[in-house]
Image (cartoon, rainbow, N blue to C red; front, side, top):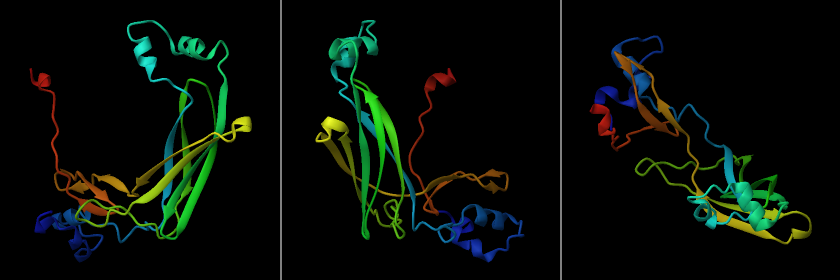
Amino acid sequence: PASPSYRYDAYDRFTDDDDSDEAVKARAFRRTDREMDYSSWNATFNVWIDAGVDDSLDATRKGRSQTLSDYIKAKHGERPTTVSGTVRVVVSYPAGGQSAATHVELETGTETMVQVSMMTPPGTRAWYPNGFGDQNMHVVVVTFTADGDNAQEESSLQTSVGFRHVELVQDPLPGGRSFFFRVNGVPIPVHGSNWIPTDTFQ
């Protein structure tokens, strides 16, 4: 935690036009969760669609000049077929579910990434780092349903996600700038190390 001189909850003791060092420090390390509305989120899910990409591709191409196009022709014929369908994302919340969908089309033997966006329901609970709040998780089910004659072909994946707002704070300080993270408006101490390659010092 920050030292008493840098306590982020001391922000309320200073006026907005106070330019003293203590006021500047208090503003830099303040909590902003009281200023933000995290009751709903604009969530975007990145979904990778694999239309029959073979794991042996890398082994097949290793040490050879075969291109991806050559590989597709060898495995699927001269004219690759097209796969199309609907990607649907369903997120479960305490108050019910929310879903969104998008259409995708790609050639057999390739893969692509599609984005599915939605607004979460009001009251969605945020995820906090350990020791700063609850780790609220939400179940996400992603389903791909093929078009046309292959409409019965469906694949799905289920996982859990947590919603949080992370920002790197670099506010002015006497003699420099701050450098720390806020998660959902709460300053969070981040522990770790940064290894700089030693050859830069040679």
